[in-house]
Amino acid sequence: MVFFVFYLLGLLTAAIRLLRRHAPRTPRQIVDTTAQSQLVVGLGLAGLFSFFGHRYRSAEVARSIGWEPDSPFQQEVAFANLGVGLTGVLCAWKRGGFWLATAIAGAAFYGGAAVVHIDEWRRTGNKAINNAGAIAPDILIPGTILGLLAARRFLPDDATVDADA
Image 1 (cartoon, rainbow, N blue to C red):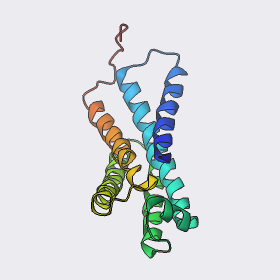
Image 2 (image 1 turned 135 degrees about the horizontal axis):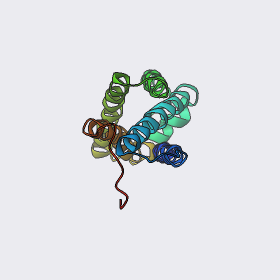
Image 3 (image 1 turned 30 degrees about the horizontal axis):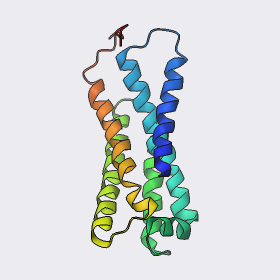
Image 4 (image 1 turned 90 degrees about the vertical axis):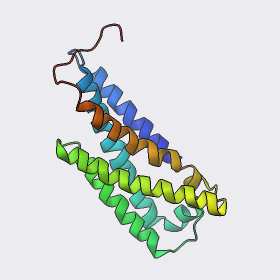
């Protein structure tokens, strides 16, 4: 459930950044700012948080997922999270194709995790908070980012915000 916090924090970060702009905001600026905030916070900071949890509090995290502690696979998951987290944070400075590459890597990892969590719930009835509770953010975070990146392709740089919206 903690990953909903990162998702919401990404939205809050985008809202604050957009509200601080003095010039009119275009749809493209709104999409870009929201996508970047989700890449940096939803994937980046969440990935780093997960890395530290799986690496340095592995027994506690394993129990919260309904896993047996001390599996070496958890250390592999930690480093996968580190990779996604670092690339997400780098989206604060990098642009263009780097965003899409980061989104694809995050979607593959988080989407794969969602499939495993769903299968674990279905096969074993594992309703542990970080198994069943992780499914929605595992889909929501990368899905939002990929949706925003797809939408931005159809928005011109000079689009204007509808005053009635």
